[in-house]
Amino acid sequence: MKNKYFTFCILFFTFGLEAQYARKYSNEFLNIGVGARSFGMGNAVIASVSDVNAAYWNPAGMTQIKDDAQLSFMHSSYYEKIGSYDFIAGAAPISKSGTLAISLNRFGVDDIVNTLGLVQNGQVDYSRIKTFSAVDYAVYISYAQVVKLKERTYAQNLSWGISPKIIYRNVGSFAKAWGFGVDVGGQYQRKNWMFGVLFKDITTTYNTWNITLTEEEKDVFFQTGNEIPLHSTELTLPKVIPGIAYKFKLGKKMTLLAESDFDFTFDGRRNVVVSSKRFNIDPHMGMEFGYSEKIYFRGGLTNIQNILDVTDSFSQKKTWVMQPNFGVGIHLKNLTLDYTITAIGSNAVALNSNIFSIKIALNKKPKAL
Image 1 (cartoon, rainbow, N blue to C red):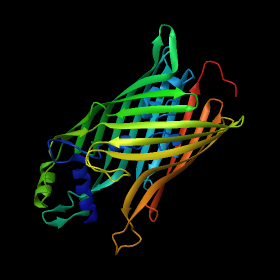
Image 2: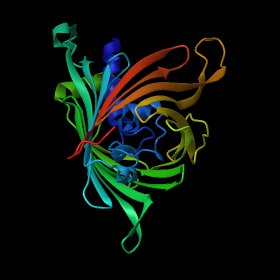
Image 3: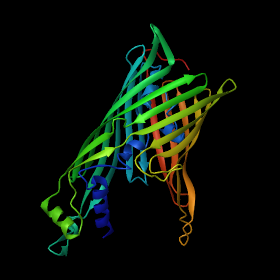
Image 4: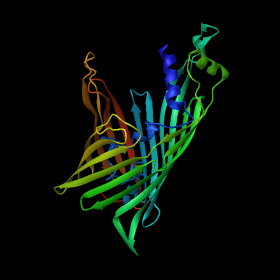
């Protein structure tokens, strides 16, 4: 019976029942993040990101790519390999001041048990149990440009970028959705200071759902007292993420980068550090220690929430919990390898997730170490 109710939850929390609505947690697979380096820093990279992964985080950062082209690959597993998340991207400068990138996100959960056909004519028939997958895709086409202040003069420390995105979501044979949205970002650098801002879903992102249920499936919904999902338009409201970073130089070969970002949301009260009906502020922060631009150690904190203490089931005491991230990176010529481990969950019940990513620099002439 648990599988049956789990199936209903998957269907309803994915589709919703209203014809058009703004959801507080809409298109959440696009809020997970990309790149093991970014995860290692608690996803606090809006101000400092400067490679191909900026297409996702802040497209303005792509203007700092010095290679002829860059490729990025990432794979991660969640909740003990129940879900898998993958990312691939490529970026290249196309002019003195402009950079173009294309990237693909995929998040999938496979082998979800569908028990809608479990009972037929009042009899339980386990041979009718099937499985399905829930998969989300997003394609970004990103462009960034250095701001031109005077004729033939470019301010290398000021840039802007834009990332239109096309979304496709599929839940087995039950439903499909197409969506479209736009992210816009900017970066500014002054000496060791870095500032950035991302206007995520600035146009409001629209997902149009098409629900397809057989007559038998509709009958099961009716007999169990559940409303039949309708075709709907799901709205993702804009989010503003400013960030500030500073890079310390610790001698000739060592550096320390520290950054703090702040997610501003306006879709109703959330369980974050600053919570209200009108707006919320969710801070996250990270640090990166680098040696000789070859070896990196990272740490970050994110998902700070005030939840009920699960260690004491008799009280209503709340406690602050957060998600710690730890990562390492190795840079070898044109290849960068990054790894991060995250602890998703409370301090008492945590699920570790592993993130791996590779970045490849493509140059006509090999660059010296």
